[in-house]
Length: 528
Image 1 (cartoon, rainbow, N blue to C red):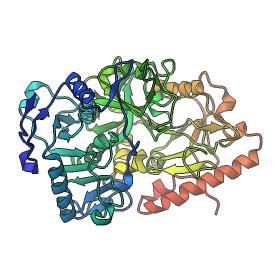
Image 2 (image 1 turned 45 degrees about the vertical axis):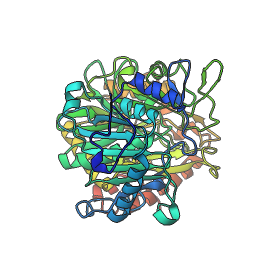
Image 3 (image 1 turned 120 degrees about the horizontal axis):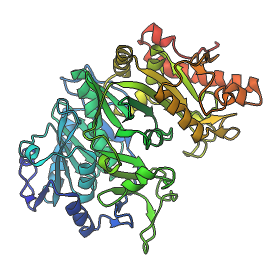
Image 4 (image 1 turned 30 degrees about the vertical axis):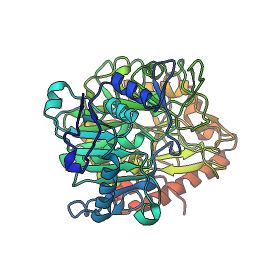
C-alpha cells in the first residue's frame, strides 16, 4: 500500500512524497527496476551491487552509551561507545535526509516463537533494501499488521555519508544502535547484511534478559525429530553441512534456545554464493529465483546468466531469499532441544582432528574461542595460515561479554545432555600449501554418524595436545583419516605445529581471565 508517512512523524520525518508500506515482493521488484537499482537475471532473482562496501563495516558500528545499559555492555573493539548527544545529531541528519524522498517501509518480526519475537520496522530509501528486509525477517499476516507497533526501527540511508573528521566515526559508513530508544541508524553503505545483523545484535542483548540463549548458528531437524545446531565462521562449511537433503532446515544463521527448544530469529537465508553449483548445493541453487536478491554477482548482460565463479566484485557474493524457498523447511522455524551440537572449524594448520568429542567444559572453552583460520591469499598480506578467533562464533554481534553466552550454553548442554563435536573441515596431512583439504565425503559421513548416534559405542583416544576425544572408528571413513598426526609424513613437524596452534589458543584466551578454572583448564596443553 502507498500512504503518506504514517507512523514516521515521531522520528522527525516529514516526507513530501509518498511512502510505500509493506509492499509485496513483486511490487518491490518493480520499484527497484523502475528506479534503476538492479536487474533481473535468468533465474528471476533481482541482481544488485553494493559499491565500495561488499561486506560489513565493523569499524563503523557504535552503541549509544546510555545509563540503562552502560554496566552490561561489553565495551571495547566490538562495542564502541557513542554519546547520546552525538547519536541525536545523527538522528537529525538522517531524518532530514530521508524527509523529502520516496521511502519504503517494512513491518515485521525477529523471532519465530511469538513469546520472544521482536517487532521491527525498516525504513529504506531503496526498494531493493526493503525487499531484502521483507525476505530476511519474519513477515506478518494482515491481522498482525493491523496491530503492529515497532519496538525497534531501522532508518536506512545508504547514500548519506558520515563526515569522519566532524562526526567522529572514522569512516563514511555508520551503524549506530540505541538500545534504550529502539532506534538504529545505518548510512554510507549499501551492503544489505548490515540491516539483518543490526537486529541480530539487538536480539543478542534482549534474549539473555529473558533466559534465551541467542546463537550465531544454523539448525536443522532429522526425521526422528532430533534437532542439531551448527556453529562456524565463514568458510567452515556451516551452510553446506546444515543444508542436508535428508534433514529439514530450521534456519541457516540466527537462533534462540529457550526453555522449550530452538527457534529461528529470521524468516529468510543470506547465503554466500561464490562458486555455487547446482550439483553441490541444489537447495540453495533452486532458492535463487524470483523474489530473491543476489548481491555483487557477475552476469552476462545479454543472457542474464550468473557466473557464480566470478569474484571480480567480491569473494563475498550473497543471495537473500525466504527460508520457505528451501524445500521442506520447518515453518514456523521452531524445533526441540538440540541433541547434537557441531562446532565447525577450517584449521589451515592441519592440526585438529577431523572430528572429536568435547566435554561440557571443553565445549565452553571452544565456544568462547570461536577458532578458524584464514589461508594465504584470502586477504592482503596473508602469506601463511592465520588463526582467527571470534568469540561465540560471532563476536561482532555480541553486546554482552562472551562468558555470559558461554555460561548459558554450558548450562543447557548439561541440562539436556547434548553431545558436542568439534569438526575440522580444513587441512590434513600438513598445513595449507602442503597438506590437502578434508574430503567433503568423509566430513559428511562423520557429521552424519554424530547426528545418528553411531559414535556412542566406539572407543576414543585423547588428543595429546588439545585433550579432545578422537573416535578410533567412524563408519564409511578410513581409520587412518581420524588421526591427524598419522596423516603427516613428519610426526615431529606435526607436534611443533600443534604446539604453535595451542599457544595461539592460550594467548587468545588470556583476555577471558575471569572464566571459571574448569573451563580454562579445558584448553590445549601448552608447554611453557
